[in-house]
Image (tube, rainbow, N blue to C red):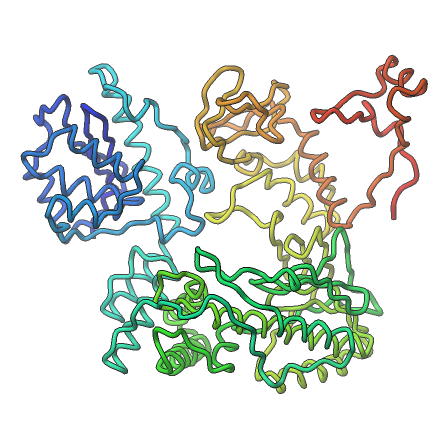
Length: 639
């Protein structure tokens, strides 16, 4: 199968359709001032309708393929194409509305749209930054510009770069695409351009229809509020937790105009204290409230993570719940998928296991979407609150026997277990598993360093686990000074000095920060675009600013833009900045003590004025005064 990346440029007097092969070679078809001399409709149709070509786009279902279909109609002009382009981009018209308006059917193209497959739902340019693509380039001309002949090479070059970003994204998503192709063959439904949640809905609909011969309809709720109905096994020992449980059961759940369940204020403000830890309930899951804390395994204690396997899927089956659109057939279909997945995983069949994992995990995401056949606010709340209360039962049981729980997050807990009493801990957890019909998996940590429950670094004997802001970049997350996290992890794992890790690296990708800037950014008067990339340099002190208001882009002082990744490692890397940032990370997770500085005298006092005159204090960007050389004013060190 030959892959062709497709991207379009559409202006009032210019239209370009560019196809790029996976070897980087391109072929473009242009309309300029309504002259179609290079826009060969027959040649384009042969490409689009050839099943041997796999046409790949980003947002093609809603944009590129719509315009390509229209561009093949002889009477369609540049102005028509531009109007449709604006209808889609500016007026949010859907593809089916355009097809209906022009009374045409989409061509049967062998097409994959990557937008839903990629996690995160961000722009193609930002995905380029997350993938460390070679070049980030913003639209060089305003979308309403009249293109001149001398600007044609610029438009071709820009469009070519977008097809190369699309190719990078395809290669990055290769495993996900192959799984979708396999599932398309298995279920007879084209799943190649769908997100995990969309796949889950499509597969469950297909399987439910196979069993019942009825296609599940979209759901119209006959209620706007309801109460949580807990399973009978939820029981607590303490008066405080029973009071919390009663409040949860009597709190009215209301549904917003968007279809989402609003968190009742009486639940939102709860602070649940068990032992030395506090917890909060939420729509999505339970969260403990720790911050800047480190827990280390030693001769007396071992840090143990216990995660519940397939937590929400198993809860939905145990509770017997189902979306209204499916009825009871959902339970049969869903249980079959879960059992088949577990069998495939046990047999080492990773393809089947990974495919069905998409269905199982994607299902839950659709229960809050009011346009989905899986929409079910009651199922959502019954599942999530049961999960949270079940974990609180386990935490209460452990704390009662002096097993401190130091963290909890959605589907698992972390326990600081006395080594001599691990068998007792296992017994308590085993009893809970039998009581709830759930299973847990154990991971031993040598140390757990937490900024908060969502951002932490856990050190294991065979590696590490980093979450939240400390997780490495990918399609789901903008990279931000990853060398600092890597240096912190090496320091925590084997005491490698973080200065050494930073100064020895020669990979510029580890030093860059990527982010979007609403309205576009500029540096010293030079426009940079909306998706920007930089590293910290000793060659500049000025910040990057917003074009629209001149405000400073956060943490961009001393940033050197690098929209094009350099071929050679820069000589102006500000190593001191990255070293200081790494130290700040280690402080924020409790691995290094937080320094306490001498207090600055009251503003406008004699002592304050003397320090200001001597140049020992200065205001920061928010007008708060700080020591110019803080290390010279260290007080006691916080433990």
